[in-house]
Image (cartoon, rainbow, N blue to C red; front, side):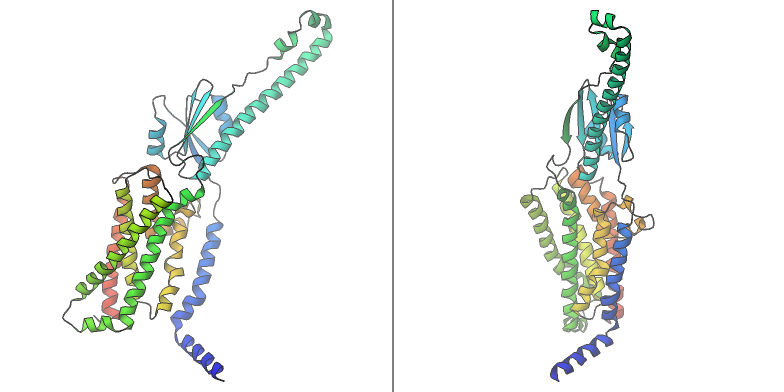
Length: 381
């Protein structure tokens, strides 16, 4: 009977809390629907390849639905072209030597270029063999008609075959980022680094401030002459200090434990993560105003945090359905992950990531202003 009584009490509390019920039953359906549309998107990935002094026959053999060919001038530097035009790779030919320089920030694009180049060489050799066999067949027919001449000149068949010569290309591959052993984890690490910073700062700051409100500490502060802006700034500085320490720990752990290669400045990387942590901090404080308990705060994660990871670059934005692509532009993690990927994998400087940093600052200011408004409304400041 006591078990039944407790069971009834739980049901009554849950039915009274309409927000918890909505988050519990509606949020999973929204996430599943989002995943459905994301994986129904276009999966045909293409890689841009710059070619310099490459035999036209080889270029024609490389060209396919997954490779976009761009002709380059003789003076163009492969590394500079890749960084300026964001090509997946550049192929340069000198005699029978081929030099393939890969950006390698996306291993799937590197694989497309390497497979296309290998397939092109096999295609040319196969075509040459077919031509040779056809020419030799015609020569045999002539030999039957002129057996005596063929006997006097054994090399006649070979001379008449006219087999095309296919250069035996020697390929050398260079990598701007990583090496031949790089895995998909190298591509995901900048994104996951930003996500870990964003997720834990959001969760901890939101729950911590919610505890301040539910235990009555916040209301006791409001009974004093302390201004609303001073309260918010105090919480931001206090939680921000721990968010900064956590961010530095995550960044240095990723660098020294995973031995991540950083082509750009580590200071730019730190600036991005600190800004991302500040956005997560202000967002966590803002979302906590709508939660009545820690349980509800956790339930906001599927609605607020999980969509961020889907639109952060794990699934290429340009491969999503057109109506889904604008959603990525309203996700703070998209700009943080984009900036970190550019710094780590492409060596972007501060000016190159200026737009992403500006957007992150804008998000932080927006959430801060919204937090002040909701504090006045819900907390009676």
